[in-house]
Image (cartoon, rainbow, N blue to C red; front, top):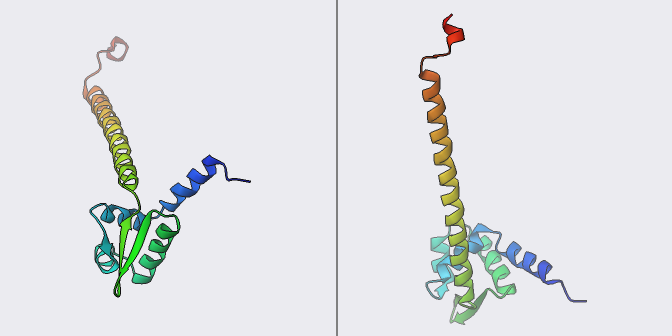
Length: 127
């Protein structure tokens, strides 16, 4: 029985759920790179990078070619770059919305602080 599409999508997004994998994909947007360059850019052990690259290969998000002793990785499709751009856009919108909310909260707090500092003109308090 085939896997439901929503389940396949969930598995796909789980694959993207590791910061090192996202960083590899970001770096590969600029073109193919050998493992040594990826390792220099990502602050993880070589064995961990190897594991993360294996996950990306298994899910066919990246391809690997051998050039002598060097393994060079590349994005398997430009759609991966599109996905990363879409994620950046969504995150930018979310952060912008949060910033607007924060500004509103600060304004509200400032207004309340100003109200508390004003002398009361309530007649019952003056009597």
